[in-house]
Every structure is written in C-alpha cells, then in structure tokens.
Image 1 (cartoon, rainbow, N blue to C red):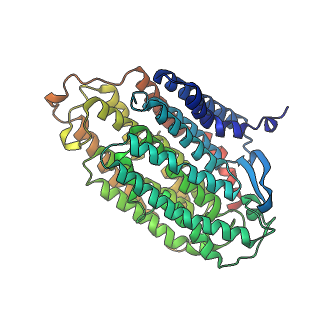
Image 2: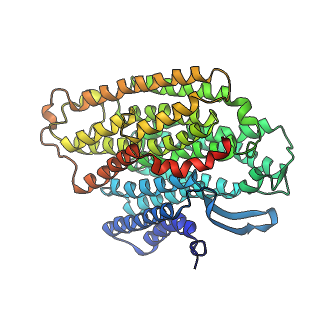
Image 3: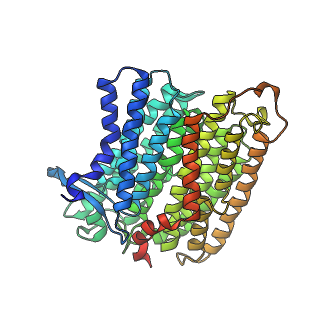
Length: 496
C-alpha cells in the first residue's frame, strides 16, 4: 500500500477538526478536554514530521490528493505539498500543539475554547495544503470565525473592537481575493480553479481584464494578512487583546498565510505563475513598501510600553523582510523569505508565549511597571533573552540564518535597478531592532527588583517543556539551516 493511498495530508488536515468534534460530542470534564486536544494536536504534529522525513528533496508536489468536489464548475478537492508548503504545515502543527499547552489554565467555557482552537488549526492547515483556488479561499475564510470567537470571548481589553477590526480587514481583503479568483476562473480555458493547471499552462489564460488588475485583486488580501504598511493597523490591536495562545498562533502561523499566498499565487513560478510577468513589473513599488514596513515597524516598536504591542510591531518589521525576499524575485531571496517565515513563526511565537508567562506570574504587561524579574524568574528570563537575541538575528539562531539569506539573495537580485539601496535601508531595521529588544529586556529583567514581585513563581515543568522545545528548534535550524533549505530551495530552482 502506497503512502498516497492512505491520504496522509487529509489526515493531518482534519485531525484537529476531528478532535473538536470529539470534544464537542463526547467529552465533558475540563481536564479531559485539555488532554483530548493535546492528543489530537500531538498526533497531527507527529504525522507532519513523518511527511517531512518521507519528503523527496528533489522537489515537486508530493502526497497529492485529487478528487472532484463540485463537478459542475470543475472545482476539486485538491491537496498537495512542496518545499514551500510543507515547512508551513510542520510549523502550524507545532504551534497548534504548543497553543494547547499555553491554554492549559483556561477555565472559562473550556470546552468551547478548545473546540474553536482546534478548528482554527484546521483552517490554517487547509490554506497551506490546498491546490484548488476555491478550496484555498474556503479555508482562508474558515479561520476567520474561530479567531473572532477566541478574541471576543477569551480576550481582554477592547476585545470586541479588536476582533471586529480583524474581521473587517480580513473580509475587505477576501472580497478582492474572491473577485480575483473568479476572474482567473473565467480567464482560464478550460475554466478551472486548479493552481497547478493555471500556473503550468495546462489551462490557457485569456484574461478578461488586464493581468495587473487580477494581480492586485489577489495581492491586497495577502498584503493585509502579512501585514504590509499601511494595512497593518489591525495587528497590534488583535495581539494586545487576544488570549496568549491566540497571539502565539496569530504571530506564529496566521501572518504566514499572507506571505505564502504571495509566493504561491502572485509572485509566480516559471513564466510568471498565474499572473505572468506582473510581479516583475511592480516589484520595485512593492519592495519600497517592504522597506517602509521594516523601518516603520521597528521605529514604532521603540515607543511601545505594552509588551504585547511591542512584539506586535516587531512582527510588522520582520514580515517586511519576508516581503523584500519575495519581490527580489530570485532563488536565494525566495528561499530566504520562506526560511524567514519559519523563523518568525518560531521566534515570535516564543516571544508571545514568554509574555504570557510574565503576565501570568506578575499580572502586568506594562514595561515601566516591571523590573528586576531575573531574580524571581531566572528560567523565564533566560528563555526570553534567547528569543529576543534570536529576533535581532544573533548568529547560531534561525533568525540570523533567515535574515542573512534574505539579504544576500535580495542584494544580488536583478529584479530592478536600485534594489541594493533598498536592501541597505532594510538592514537598518535590524539595527533598530537590536535597540528595542535589548532595551526591553533590560527594563523588564535587569533593573532594580521591585518588592511587589517578590515571591512570584518561575516556569513550571509543562511551561519549561514547550518553551525549551521552541529554543531547541531555534538553535537547531540556526546551526543547521540546510535541514530546511534543502527542502525549500528546489521549489525555486526554476528561477535560476
């Protein structure tokens, strides 16, 4: 029996949703709910690792599943992964497992919380696995409902406002994306939603509107999700008011949906993917916005007094590096962009987990009101410091490997004249980043200890397990990035 006949991608994709159904129908006690959620997410993560081990490093789509879904419009249930999507699947299942443990102390409507959390994981996984545009759009929208519910019910502060702002921004982008997808469908001959057929030329593209219009209809949805300045304003609010686990997922994998969509659909492969040539025509403008995002996000971070908002703005800056790598449009920069997506997911996911631990112990997130916590919580201090140093690109961490690859690829790009100037400007984002990260660590952990925090606890055994797992992966891929790059690079070999 071949591995394809077992449908491994469908199993990984729907395991979290199956866990949500089991919890909803069969489980009553809160403790059992937590254990069930942990079990289903662990199995999904283990299976994704098995796919990584079995993955053929020569590239191409693998573990493909294809069946008619809505035959009247030629929509298919079409799944598959390559070196672009498989790392995102592994990252999602890992972050999903960690999110369950981060949520272990949730005691308000516990059953509903874990149901929404597991459904959110399935929605995100579906985006990374789908090769049919209609199926892709469906999963893109599915994640919206769990995210809204998790922020609105279990969030804090202006949670209703932040959740609704997230929904409005996402739906605004989704409306444009749907228009772009339908335009592509009617431009393809024969009509199809298959990404593979459109990109390979198996379906001939006869545009019913200019290709640039289709490009930007789809691009704007991804730019909001990435997010790109000035479409980023939903992100700090959503992070600030979301529960810790949701912030971990939001930073760890939700933002990657935007970058993934840009690479898969609008940056294109071969002769330009689904919108041939347009990415090259507008690369200069988009790279300028990438540099603005890097510098603006870093500068805005310097002014933040709330730990969550600080890390949220740092995400705007770091995802700007991803955008730079994508639209530098060469093999190394694109490989670096995917590595940066994975890097940002691990590092920022850990940073938000650490903020959650600090808040859980001190009930405080305001930086000026903290101080001297290294004495009370040495393990949290050390891990928070490692995460911060990885975020500023310390060698031997994945942050350095990813940013160095993006910069090397982008600087040597021939996408447009003057790109080297843009890369040099973006490097200043790292300099500013070093400032805000080190300043934050000094204010929170290394100033005069405050009496009100005497006796606060350090990380417990469960918390140590998941934060050490983050640290282990950050260092593993920092010391040996080839482990990922050997999977990622063949996807972009056609760029040369």
